[in-house]
Length: 435
Ligand SMILES: [Zn+2]
Image 1 (cartoon, rainbow, N blue to C red):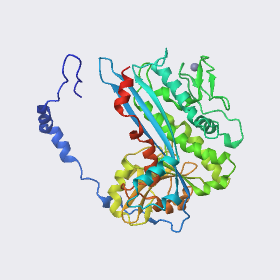
Image 2 (image 1 turned 90 degrees about the horizontal axis):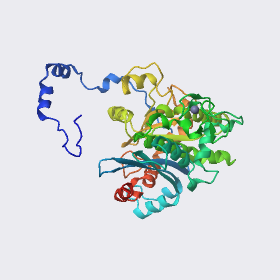
Image 3 (image 1 turned 30 degrees about the vertical axis):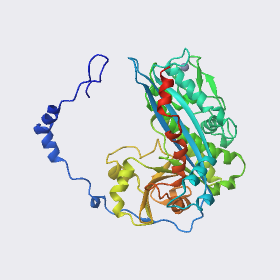
Image 4 (image 1 turned 60 degrees about the vertical axis):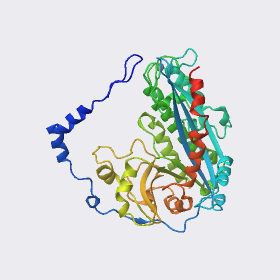
């Protein structure tokens, strides 16, 4: 990487000559020659295509979540200040209204009306570099912002509160026991805390006596330094908040005592059903809840659509093999050897996923990677491992968008609500950032 420009001297430029050196290197040339051909479709062997179930009952309501981030730099002066705005949205689409719209050329005003009516959103802001909240360090500011933001007063109705949903998951409140939260590392003394006592929002660390929040259990502090935080803290917050938003809806129905409503609802996430790195603390509670509900006779229809990444690339590779209205469930061996092309001791997604993946082709033109919840971890080989498989896969065709390739309308709508275009312009942010 070349050096960046300072106040006095210009940036280093990558020399064009050095590119020629690289191409002339005998070692590089030998390696290039030895690269094998791109993976060819035939080497994948047979893939086990199944037909998409037909005649499934359409969901009358679809809840979809999405989020967006805007990073702002104060571009002037020597000290770079940086902050990030995060927005998440939960959107409800009624199938009845959707079915009345023209799928190929929906009227923009009709779309706007659909979008404005049934959405909730949440927004917050993080200082990433050289900005503090009062006397606090960036490290403590962000811990406090996360705690406060999860308690967003705009969503303060307790039946829908995001923080109450975090508590509901962390303490696994559905099982009637007084469980502790998952264990975590103290953000002050770095020693292990065996979870907070049941139903507590915060508590004092048993080792150092300083105050810790339930939100510290999620592990944001593990990716921060004392005076700066990487932009990934904001995207991690978005990931956690999207998940909690979706489960706030699920908890709302679960606790309302009208569990038959789950039969009418599909919960749809933009992106995979997973949490990454240290944020996996909620994976076990989520799996436990879905399994618990299933065993109680309540099917929770939960699905994520993956729009980028390795699995989507793989879908493009195998798309010629997919016949219209079929799906293919890749098991662990297939994923490790053909999608990721790496060996690993652990089963794929064992720590991070609360659903499994499949490749779906709907009609002649739409294909997608989706994830469906499984309850406990499973190395799926058949649709029986998934919760609510037939109805989810069999009814995706009713939610296809004809405006964007391989898109689902509820996710498009949630994206519209969460998208950056509904922020004040970046220019206005800069005015504030430079104060
Ligand atoms: Zn401590």
